[in-house]
Length: 280
Image 1: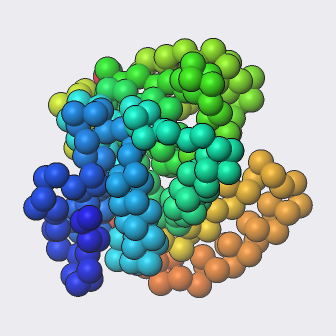
Image 2: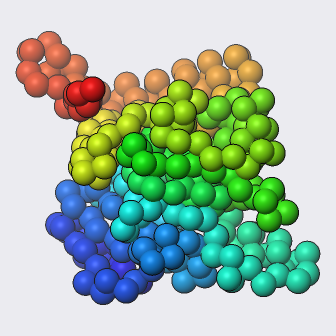
């Protein structure tokens, strides 16, 4: 599988083997992870899951990676788990199959750096779940999201039981899971699943621009804020205020904060700049 920036130079790196299940490119601190089984709509097989696990752990350990983009090769994001590999006949084996994935799923969900998913075509099942692990989803007009697990007598996996209710609310999450219906890009935008819709030809450029902008934020402040928000639904006001105080106390001491204040006072260009909205 592609190795994520082993020499720590953070120059542009790309898989040269187009047949790898996961292609990893790192350019100026932005790691682009491309699910690479386009003929199978990038369905997750064992090799791809192993590659994702290795890559997520490498990125966690590599502080030179400031942001991550998830995307699919070809015309789809991910059709979910590869049904042909779902030959599970015992409850223990089924649990083990998912348990093997939960380590890297949790590591990606609370990665203290920005993650942007670029969704074109289908994001079904585990593909939808994988996209929900990102901080933001940018979709093309032809993107389609679905939790089809009920159609095959399965339970949503890859973290969706946690992420989906937090994104769309419990009532809507129940409806999407129990109906197993498809959601188009416009409805996904209204539901808050998608941050914005980008023309198909500009989708990956837009996702990269968002990742680069977010990667320019204070890594300390971003990581503290992200992880605190992940705890907010399971906490109370007093606990969150305490996290706020602790986080702010740390953030005040960073070189990034001091430099940002200096630039503000001197009316110099800011360190952090969010990209301009896409024109309608």
